[in-house]
Image (cartoon, rainbow, N blue to C red; front, side, top):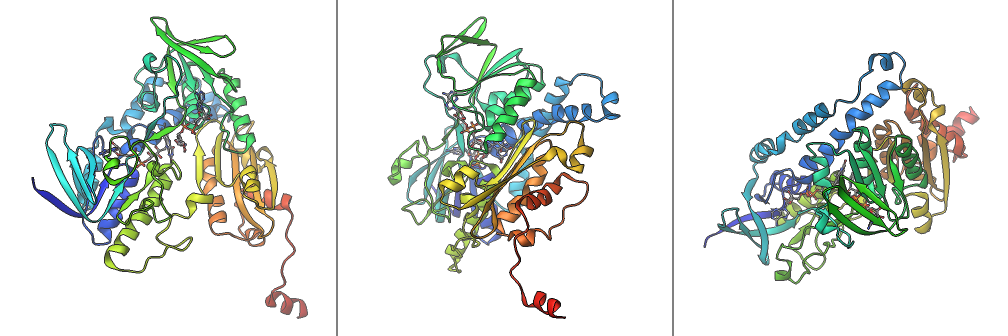
Length: 486
Ligand SMILES: Cc1cc2nc3c(=O)[nH]c(=O)nc-3n(C[C@H](O)[C@H](O)[C@H](O)COP(=O)(O)OP(=O)(O)OC[C@H]3O[C@@H](n4cnc5c(N)ncnc54)[C@H](O)[C@@H]3O)c2cc1C
Ligand SMILES: NC(=O)c1ccc[n+]([C@@H]2O[C@H](COP(=O)([O-])OP(=O)(O)OC[C@H]3O[C@@H](n4cnc5c(N)ncnc54)[C@H](O)[C@@H]3O)[C@@H](O)[C@H]2O)c1
């Protein structure tokens, strides 16, 4: 059997894998992507893009219904068939032809099939027809195989053939009722989407809703879901699931039973490392891959892991960020160039630790970045927390009637910089990058006073937060002294 050599082999052509290969090729190396399903991965076909499309129309309708003038013009119901058709368009009818064209244009090779590591720097790919190809990497193998839904160990659940996130986002006909197991981002977003479609939704969470975020985020989303007709059961244990001709019966620990046409399991993710041949190189199949900040797997000088599979931050934008660092550092190491691996250097994914932005597209939206107040305290920071109600802003008045929401800024009192920010309200997602820049740039609060938000926008929340905090006493600079003296 012949072996084909590349500088870099990337296992998995999702958002993260594509970016590693692209950076490696841009740096002058050769790279091959190995993909078993669709080039573009989960985000393009079964996660971010379809889920956000399913949420968007109902959100636009609700906003229009809350603006006099527009409300009178928008008198019909949501056209669910048109929403599903737009979703099909967004996922290109689950064809990856467009992304394959991009891969070709970027000068990246593509081998279709299931890749397994069969030795140091070696990957064997088994195609759908059973033929195998052996690839050897001169410099690096990167694992970018993503994650799958995690199925909790609940009596009868597997046999009940529950939906995972893929079945929910690729839904062809909306069930009359849907039970959702889980209280995280997928559960909250899908509950929002299916309530918008008119399904009778019951969300069953083992603990709270959106628990890793500031507490008011879960509370506001909970209020909204309930107001829109969803049943939300918190701190609730599911003991047994049974499917029959009538649908799915979900028995709860308190002795009650929820019955729904379908059940969606959204209880977290598991790494796609079970069938990768990890045992051939001394790693344990089925485990997350732990890396250093250059994304190199602990204990290896040729193996990297980016995206969901390393569990650093299960988000497309963070996976792509890691991929840019990994692709560039592979090039640097291959060519003997300087490696910049100090915190915030070119070749490290420092932001994964304390500066991860996330928008949860519920109604209201939750936009958060950096440390929550709780996480900051646990990390030992001396913090001050400043809150502001968004409804009082002129920009919120103009946005829509009844605009409500909350913002929180977490300040490091020692350095007078922002450690974390959370905005909950309609369309706050577009606000988030301002907070990310403040955190990553460690912009001092007294300088933030000079970042003037436009009137009348919801971004004026920044000014209100700063005013609520109080203007820090300036450290007198030479210029100020000469003005004072003159
Ligand atoms: C419902 C849902 C909504 C989401 N919404 C958002 C969002 O709005 N914003 C956001 O930032 N994140 C969102 N996420 C998270 C986001 O989808 C993931 O973080 C992202 O897709 C991970 O990208 P990845 O490249 O690591 O993995 P993937 O996109 O999963 O790509 C991995 C690829 O590897 C391939 N593969 C696996 N094993 C092998 C093998 N042995 N051989 C060959 N190929 C293999 C797979 O077929 C796949 O194409 C969402 C997730 C879900 C479930
Ligand atoms: N908009 C976005 O950025 C977006 C959207 C969707 C998903 N994602 C990413 O995808 C990842 C996966 O999301 P997820 O929501 O599946 O996982 P998650 O880890 O965010 O949440 C899992 C939730 O399920 C609950 N749970 C666990 N076992 C349970 C059980 N037996 N019964 C009831 N509840 C149970 C947990 O308490 C938790 O609330 C997340 O890390 C997220 O970052 C991002």
